[in-house]
Amino acid sequence: MTSDSIRVEAQRTVEDAESSLPLLMTGYQQGNAQAVDELVRRLSPPLWRYFLMSTSRNEAEDLLQECWIRIHKARHTYRPSEPVLPWVYAIARHTKLDEYRKRRRRETRETLVAVPPEVPAPEARAPGTPDLEHMLSELPESQREVILMLKFSEMSLEEVAGATASTVGAVKQKAHRAYEKLRQILEREGH
Image (cartoon, rainbow, N blue to C red; front, side, top):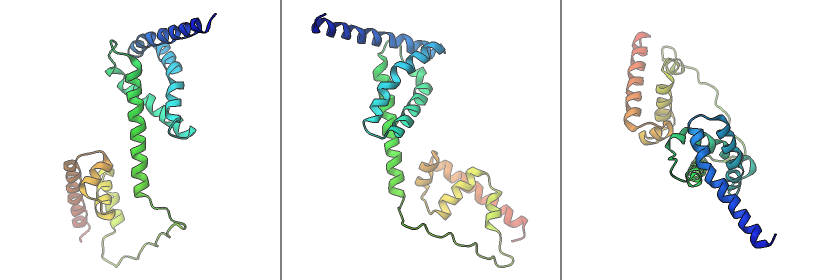
């Protein structure tokens, strides 16, 4: 075999592999376990190399897992008439970008310190003052989370909405309901 014939045969093999991807993806959409296994077997190595180009091995593995989760969730959006690889790599790209953004947000909010600060001892409450921890523990988790972010972490409504993946209106509603519940607790305890 000459080098030209080897190159032509390799190109034909790649084309055959790519032409079977839409069939595998359609099988995946229909719940065919063999199609899923074959798709994962074929696409995981190139996706892993794609992620490895910009991260460590461990992070590339995490990104690959996250990418497959997203592919699974979005599999219904794939159109059989379209090529599979651009669709898959668009998901991979968004996975990588989202992880980069998450890491950047975390890095901008974290401050490295040589010695972590000591946690202050709980202050003694004056007699007759309400027990804030007890009151907050009576709130539903979502309301407690919003109050802690707004009042104790001094975050803005927009920041809390972003942190909780909700709207500003939903944050306002949770805060309002939490304040109402706290008022009821204070009245019940005679404060």
